[in-house]
Image (cartoon, rainbow, N blue to C red):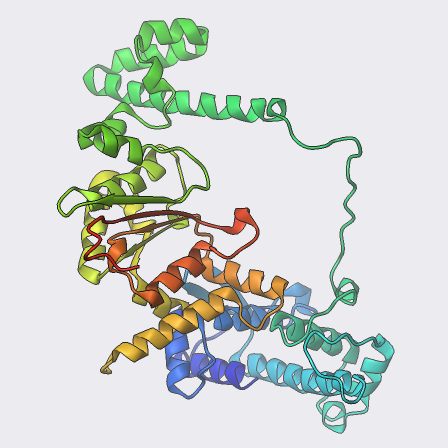
Length: 454
């Protein structure tokens, strides 16, 4: 409650003249740091994001389901906040919700048998009893609430959203459930089930090469390009390929153009490096060891480009960790040379910068010591692993923090210390039982055992 109250006050202070319909960006990491500076040590980017989404749900039970604010995600750490009611209404609605939530929490705690200790303690009650608890509160009765049932529902959902309590079967009272019917007799999917999808992607790959050929013909002679497009629709596929793209069978199976393949793979000029870069195994961890000056960082950059241009991976699903900011800048520059604007959507960071972003910490304007960075690394690992949370809560928190990353690539692996190693292991999901939740790890490092650290 204190954190949300401070968050709303800060937003109002930063945009005091904002009216209904006005929007402004909110940097979650910057907001977290401001609130930490105000004494809210528990402020974190994902915690603020969770609070903002709760505020956006306030007011949806009136005026056609419109919330008090509207949120739009601009980037991984930035939200666009648009006022749909005045700041005064936002504050009043939140204050009523807090009062009701506090009363309900007191009521639920009173239902726990005396002497009970532990967490995830189950409490059974009824809507009627909870409603009676709210109606019996003098402050709520004097607040002018018209429909106490709606306030009760919103307060309970807020407590659930903020992970104060978990609504078990009671959640179906407020949210529509779905019934899932399993098809009996099907043991699982077979290769035959995926043939239509495979054909779809094969055709999509071919179309990429046809469009490239069309562009090349058009640059030389537009009439040839027009004839190519006409025959693409008039001839069967084999005749079309024999006439317009002869002898390019291997190239046509690749999900990229010949030019991109040459830049990313052929230009390496080293069979071992090419094999490493074009490794198409799924869910595989790879450690590349080589001596100084052997081109390890180049292999790492070309591997990223291969994932983007050949494997068609989402750039927002790729995380690259380097030893220092200079190395991170060099990786960005090299990657931009290979893949252009897509490089900007790949996260390239140092371990410490990633940890600070995850927990919302900043040392700007201060003299940071080693122990400060170590503390941030430890806190980031603790949050990713969901220490102190139930399994479902830990998985939800991890998913929020990891932001959809599927690949993690590490440069100069031999230089990482215990804190950085713990962070990489946590992000990669090393201790997770479910292999689908783990990231594929690709690391390059020096094979000089005298300089390498475990």
